[in-house]
Length: 458
Image 1 (spheres, rainbow, N blue to C red):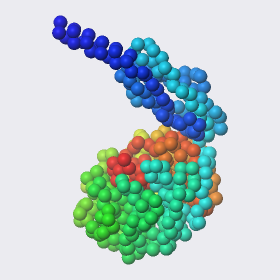
Image 2: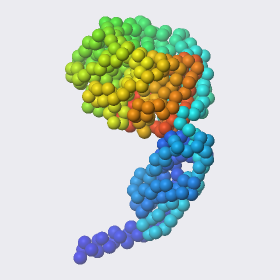
Image 3: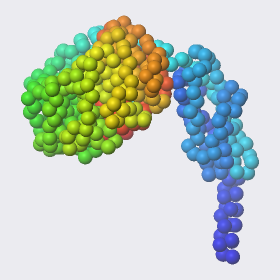
Image 4: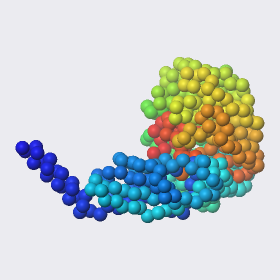
């Protein structure tokens, strides 16, 4: 009897609660009047979510999808729609009492995937891969010595000049500080407004991109053969000497282990205190940055024409012979496929066991590291002047011809825009198929901030 009374009271309270407060609903993404492409995650926010029975997504007055539980999201595929077409979106929400409320109607324009959004002219060629800040700012350096901060609409926010070329891709820490190396031998730390925070001098040029430990330590390599660890204030924590130049960008495992390649043919595994854990010898120099899978497997390429998979203890899991040097860093797709480019002009897709899934031939060297979108599309540049978008099956989705070769590694923003630099002294922005994939390692240096760390970028 007591149980019945308690359940009755709870029912009455819920009924009263659902009627006392007014039900409200809004589409929070995309925004009214925005331009979209690819797969668009229409997101709805509603008050009194516990009282909602279902949410109906309507596009152009046609019911497209029904959701009965949070989150209220519909992945709207726009790829088959005409380019530059206009569409209306609204949702209907029904509560447990049968009441209906309709959201305000929004209008969006659909652009085809691969359409150029904007092109920004830099002073000299851009080989660095863009990093993207939390506010959508795009950071990139050029060969002339300028470092740029661009707004998502392609306007210059600020630029900072070093004394010589920049080929180190930038990285952004949790405080918003931007780090990059230069051929003037300095690692730079810039504030979000473009002012200098500090700089640290090594004994040779810096092509390596910085990575961040969980405690904020900054790791990078230099052509003086050292791997450096700096405190967040720019003071030296430690440095480790390899046998030759370090242009490879370090990456950080879950336990804090640092992996980095050297031109002395070794991949190094270093403890957070700077001591050697192990090292693995390949047949020639290592310039690419490693990638780390969910099980701790380390993937990297070497200039000995092989692509390697190592266990966390430094033993060989497998290696795959590729037709030429591997400067490209690997990315991991939603199904575990490993993607990497090579100087034999191919983009490779390898299965997790090291067997070939497919390879796609471009018309030039592929130094660009692939980036993977949530729908599995693979984006990579090539020396043949094209940016390629490939389907997970290895077929061509689309390509865009820029003014010169593309060695820059693409970045995919949360709204699906693809950013990439080019040797024609430009940064390009394209409409893509969706945001960055949620995989163990979907792009160069792991995430949009280029933290280079498992679990980084949040």
